[in-house]
Image (cartoon, rainbow, N blue to C red):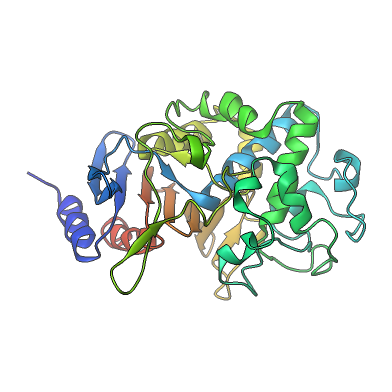
Length: 341
């Protein structure tokens, strides 16, 4: 017999025309693993638990873990200044920007896609074709010579460019290409065998196309809406099981020492007016007074919506991957109605 949460999620998926896969696990068993919609609409290939989905900015956690690993190895510190660990010129950037500022979105630098003033991601590629964006250096012309947006440490300002810089720091410090570093030091250690930073023009099998739906019922894929290869600010592909394995590896100190895991999961900066939302290193943190309710990551791009969380009180992990521009948030809220009663 199906559990209540399975029945509930199935109904919500159908009601909202959700396309993707949902996984909910506790420490002992899988509570639900449900899929709906198509990974490839043209060929009628359905989504499944083995489908690889893009997760957009959900990947910032991988970048933050990598930085913490390099700190643990004694190659960096969280107080290391940008100017001292990256030999790239940023003529208008403040000289006091540190790795901690970049990790917590408090560096004050300009963003190549500023969500406070822009709402159409596709506008970026008019002058900078997305098919030319294959390396982290390819992102630099989008923000490198712009002036500071804010003073260093002034406030939280969600910033993709800051995580591009962190990726470049990882490459320069480790002497390994960013995607290769993540594959070796994070994906392999976390048993994320199906995950990777794939290029749109050479996707492996079982990878979902991202779909952008229009009010008149037509649609298009997102291959001309995003960089051809994702970077350290987002763009990897994962399966739901791989993402659950990542949470296990992180929480059980398999990727970092207990001390550095704690550093990553510390709520450093307030992100919400109600005082209960915070940001750590690459991870969002929700509190209720002094109690941590959940650690979570999310990502939204044209044709991508993603939410994943770890709830420390119950040891439950949720992963919601969708290959449409929305849908993951609604499923997450419905799951939490059952989990957080």
